[in-house]
Length: 63
Image 1 (cartoon, rainbow, N blue to C red):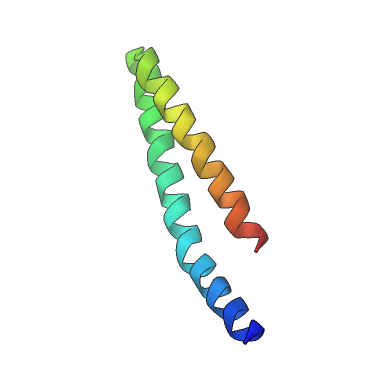
Image 2 (image 1 turned 60 degrees about the vertical axis):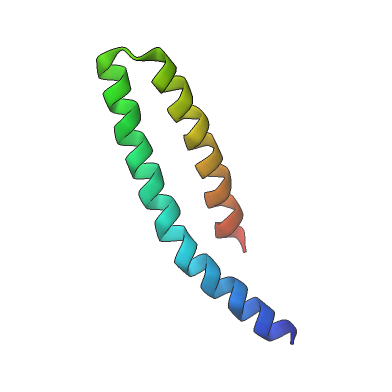
């Protein structure tokens, strides 16, 4: 049973990692646009989101 759970977890990680990377790419574009536009509030919001995504990426990469 343990092997089945590990296999399911690995498959879930394989599906989630590309999605997280795409979200990071999108947020980086958003941050770039906010920096060019001088939108400080959007920069802060995007940086917070990038920090969350970074944690998710690390969490799913380890397992």
